[in-house]
Length: 545
Image (cartoon, rainbow, N blue to C red; front, side, top):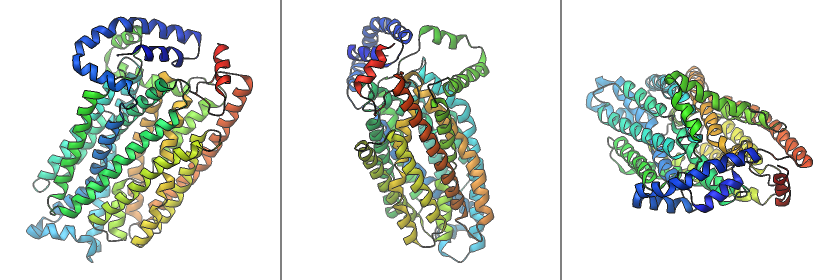
């Protein structure tokens, strides 16, 4: 870990709130000074470049942009490819005419044939969710605790990005072999390989932890944390938007058989580019664990003990005693994120518009691009707007706004019978997008800095469990209701959003109650900063310790 003298001083002031923690940081940073020159000699010019980027405001944000573009293309092309490939494999008797038949299936009067394909794809999605999420449940806590400990932020990030590259490569192979072999093994394999490095949430969690670290280094009082999280979310939104636009262009311009290969090739290019950029330019921001802690890891016997130890660290983050209702609010927030991510994925949305609206691939990609523009604008506008208000816990207000409009969006989606209704309802995604920067800014304020990656890992675990339950529940609902209300699954999502909204409003009440009582008592919170308290009060509380 390479620290500038300025960063060392900031860490001494910002990493902890008690005298014991200050002593621990001082003990750790002094040996770091002796290691810096040796480390820079080893890294040479590359280390100098990364150090320059570390001192700048921008560090991991370009990785978020590149990876988001690749993820967006991947997420848009994959459901199209799976549907087409399964159609081709289920109707080999059509020979050379199978391509045109499958491309135009939604516009034909072959309801029984289309329903059979949709049932098959929904079943495949169930097994994919298990293949991808189960290994991530084991790996994500290990990487999260490693990121807060001896591994730092950078190594888990590189590992997750490498996993994304492998996943994209497997899908690319599948686009070349689907006519000669079943897509099932490769479809399960690419999900499994993605989960084996913690799933997509690991690279997001470690990236957001690095953004949090940079914000605290830039402003030790945490005054820029919400803004930096909003910017990071907006960067991801721009990446998703660019990916959607690229996908729309591919679908419009490419020949029918090259759409999927070209799309996955570009997804792989952007994914590999994000890994290369991270290797060359992204520098460490986290504080490595003390030697004794690293030694404890080495003394663990066997993979089972390591997994148990890492899970225990994440669990301890959720169960440690905190001021007032903070611990309960943290756990409720994790639960609400889990329930929120029970919502439908892009695969079932694609099946719905094919069945209900007879959309082709081009119309679906246009819809994705349109909603991508709105989400990106929302992620930029909402954090700026909320900063000009006087609400307490502005991040929580963003989350509440997102839940309200997300629920309305799902209701409209469930009853959409025309393309006009679909695109009209899509405008609500601008308001629903307030939820993303809200969650990412609120979560780090509920824990100490050393727990940042672990708490994001806890959210990652919840998000990795959700697709398993979601796929089996909503795919089954879709299969059962496809003949009389294809959008019923979306209505169930709206009900879930309403339940979560009520629960989070209660959490918001507890947070406000805790913060007001802590401010009245002059207590030092685990939060980075309370926007509602003056800097003088913050300094006063620090002097109490």
